[in-house]
Length: 468
Ligand SMILES: *[C@@H]1O[C@H](CO)[C@@H](O)[C@H](O)[C@H]1NC(C)=O
Ligand SMILES: *[C@@H]1O[C@H](CO)[C@@H](O)[C@H](O)[C@H]1NC(C)=O
Ligand SMILES: *[C@@H]1O[C@H](CO)[C@@H](O)[C@H](O)[C@H]1NC(C)=O
Ligand SMILES: *[C@@H]1O[C@H](CO)[C@@H](O)[C@H](O)[C@H]1NC(C)=O
Ligand SMILES: *[C@@H]1O[C@H](CO)[C@@H](O)[C@H](O)[C@H]1NC(C)=O
Ligand SMILES: *[C@@H]1O[C@H](CO)[C@@H](O)[C@H](O)[C@H]1NC(C)=O
Ligand SMILES: *[C@@H]1O[C@H](CO)[C@@H](O)[C@H](O)[C@H]1NC(C)=O
Ligand SMILES: *[C@@H]1O[C@H](CO)[C@@H](O)[C@H](O)[C@H]1NC(C)=O
Ligand SMILES: *[C@@H]1O[C@H](CO)[C@@H](O)[C@H](O)[C@H]1NC(C)=O
Ligand SMILES: *[C@@H]1O[C@H](CO)[C@@H](O)[C@H](O)[C@H]1NC(C)=O
Ligand SMILES: *[C@@H]1O[C@H](CO)[C@@H](O)[C@H](O)[C@H]1NC(C)=O
Ligand SMILES: *[C@@H]1O[C@H](CO)[C@@H](O)[C@H](O)[C@H]1NC(C)=O
Image (cartoon, rainbow, N blue to C red):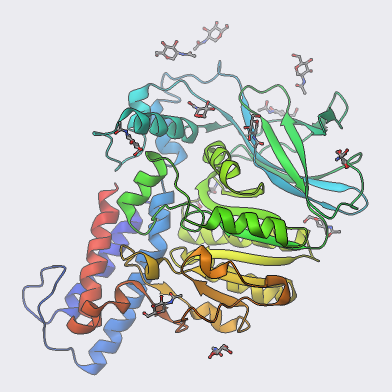
């Protein structure tokens, strides 16, 4: 984790040096005009530059999501060093999930077995390095402690869990329940189990059933949606699509994630409610890079504001940006394989570099299952977003099936099932390359793209470093 920002520093320094013919290159936000570099130099700077911005862009969510690792947390709260967990009873959480039908319903059991250690409030306050906790009011302090308490869940490796299933308030499983597969080294489990007794698939709308884990403290309860074989599935990213996170401004991203109440992106609750009502057999699947330990925090927020759906959370053992991409690709693949007859609406935003690559990829793999891909352009609507994004993967996606939007309103009147994904009143600026953020700014044009970029990349790296 620590190695990443250093790589970025090295890259951005290379850019600064290369881009600044002036002998005394200060990384000021408004560089003075300088002689343009020779064309050949410019193109090589350009390539260093684009990999540097790419690195910054792809590192940002990781820096955010690279919230303390499990071993950081264990160290901080003294597990293996006085804070003995052996007398703490086991907890488990079930992440809301989905089921498909093949004669019986196949339920996905997906979640975490963990222990919640007894942590002092001062340790809860200081769990997130780089988050300033000096001037919090009591509401903010409570939110912080509530969320860091969840984050401090210590996984139980190789746990043996027994699940129960309830429909309409009665138990479907017998008293010995369903023995799940032993959890992995990080307390996680993810498997399908065929459960008889849940009726047939004649319903044209999703049905919700309850699940639970036996003999654990803590909530242990979950929901599974029984999804009809055909219909429309909406897959949506959460951060900066449904809730305002501003992951592209590192200090605000952390602040919005840990000390502020979650705030909806305007219009999205209404848009999703309209889709839930109007699209055939609509089902919702929310995909996030927020770690699995924060599931309950997210569930409470999401289901009070958006249609009930399944969640994909970020696995615990992720350290590299490439693993974040793998996790997204795997969860998409699992959905498409589980519902081969459904059509998917994929919703993301330009600040999520992993989705800008994962959505076009799954669209190429399953072209007949794509209804529409909607990407919110966060840099068009928020001048704080200076991070460029890369639209080149969309070169391989059928024109007319993807659309870059600015507000939920832009999507409100589209006839998705009639094949309409594009609102022609919204200008599209897809270059199939790196674009947006500071690349589009007047200053970048006036002062020279590369030099301006160098200053901004330097600033982004400084911010990233300040998180450690
Ligand atoms: C754990 O519980 C046992 C039995 O109740 C007790 O003897 C032991 O001291 C406890 N250990 C700790 C660390 O509290
Ligand atoms: C947690 O620890 C505090 C102080 O170390 C102690 O006073 C409290 O009783 C503990 N709570 C539980 C539930 O063990
Ligand atoms: C405390 O912070 C919350 C969240 O930022 C804010 O909504 C609230 O108004 C603040 N309360 C006071 C008394 O300042
Ligand atoms: C966090 O808050 C929720 C709801 O406000 C509550 O149910 C939960 O017990 C709290 N968790 C902790 C660890 O304080
Ligand atoms: C789960 O069961 C297996 C086999 O009975 C046992 O070896 C293992 O220790 C159990 N796991 C835990 C965490 O108790
Ligand atoms: C729950 O009850 C409703 C209405 O009585 C029924 O249509 C549905 O099939 C039941 N669901 C299950 C899973 O048994
Ligand atoms: C759960 O606890 C009950 C009562 O303590 C016990 O009889 C039962 O065997 C336990 N079940 C499992 C699956 O551990
Ligand atoms: C667990 O139950 C609580 C209380 O009924 C509910 O608020 C929460 O949404 C449930 N969790 C899941 C994952 O269904
Ligand atoms: C966790 O991730 C690290 C880094 O990718 C890897 O070396 C390790 O083997 C992983 N551990 C497990 C149990 O998968
Ligand atoms: C149900 O989902 C499982 C797991 O993804 C998949 O293997 C199976 O083919 C699906 N069944 C149907 C009928 O689509
Ligand atoms: C996609 O279609 C639109 C409208 O038909 C057209 O304006 C645009 O140039 C096309 N884009 C590409 C890349 O073909
Ligand atoms: C495309 O660029 C124009 C001009 O910069 C801007 O007004 C518009 O919001 C952009 N469209 C999108 C979807 O970002």
